[in-house]
Image (cartoon, rainbow, N blue to C red):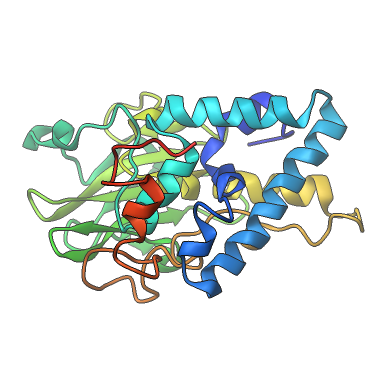
Length: 287
C-alpha cells in the first residue's frame, strides 16, 4: 500500500498522472468537449497531487514530472502524450515488454490463481465470462471492467475482484483472443505488489497487456493514500480518486456500455489522430 507519494512512488505509478500531458492545442481541442472538460479537471488535480508532494517531500515540480515522464516511457515505450492520442483513437497501450503471444501455449493458461488461497478456498475464474470467485462467492466488480478492441468489436478484456473492502487483495482475469476464453492473470497482494497468477512472480508495469489494467490494479492503494493524506485537510479534501485518476469509461475512451464498433472513441473527426501526430499515425512523436 502507498503510504506516501514521494518522487519514486509517483514515478512507479506513472500512468495515473498521464493527463498532465493532455495539451490544450495538441490534444484537448480535438476531443469531445464533455470529455475534454473531465480530463481538464483531472489534469489539474493530478498536477495538484504532485505539487502537494513536492511541498511535503521536497524537490521541484520539474523533477517530479520528469521522473514520471521518464518512467512512463520506460514502462510503455512511448510518451504520455503519445499514449493519450493512441487511446483516443481506440487503440490499446500495452507495456513495452508485452507480447501478445506470450500466453499462446495452452499449458500456460490457468483458471485458478495457483499461488494463493483465501481462507483455504481457491480463487478461480469462469473461463466463459471472466468472473472471479473465492470458493463459490462471486467477487467480481463489473464497474471496474476494462474493455479492449479485438477485431471489429470492443469486448470485456480485464475483470477485477476484491476480496474484501478491508483487505488489499485484488484479482484480475483477462481475455485470450485466440481461445476466446478468460484466465487468471494476476493479483495485487497486501504489499501492493502485482504477482502472476500462475507463478507468483512479480509482474512489472512494462509487462502489462493494457495501461487501464495497470491503473485499475493500483486504484485502491491510491484511494487509501488520498484518504489518509488529505482526509482532514480542508484545502485538499475535494481531491478523490474519481476526480483525479484516469478512468477508461468515465473519461470517454470507451462507450459507456463497453461494447461497440472498433475505431476512434474520443476524437471529433476521423482525421484528428493524423493531425495530432502531424501526419500518418505513429510517424511523428508527440512531445
